[in-house]
Length: 118
Image (cartoon, rainbow, N blue to C red):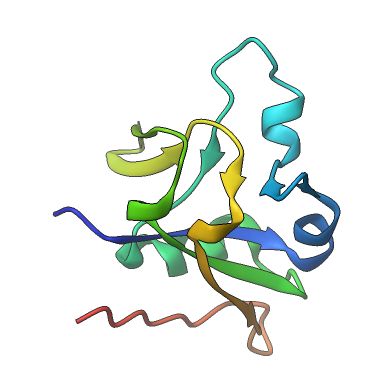
């Protein structure tokens, strides 16, 4: 299923620090110059799993909502543990970002995220 929205999870501080020349350029891009540098993203049904697997207990976590039709770099996919995840192959242009949502954890440090895109 093709989605018009994809999502990126990032700490609020990293988001602020990595906006350079009007584009989001995470360390994964600057550390891998000349290699296959990508911004990892997820589909709507993968957000909660990724948040809890990679960011459990993280405070000040942003869910970046991205319109795939506005993304300038090429979007490809990668398969990890049987799941196919979208990834952006270069700096993310800010006009593709349609929202950023500050997520909160429950008492156990877990995220409960439901995305309804219908």
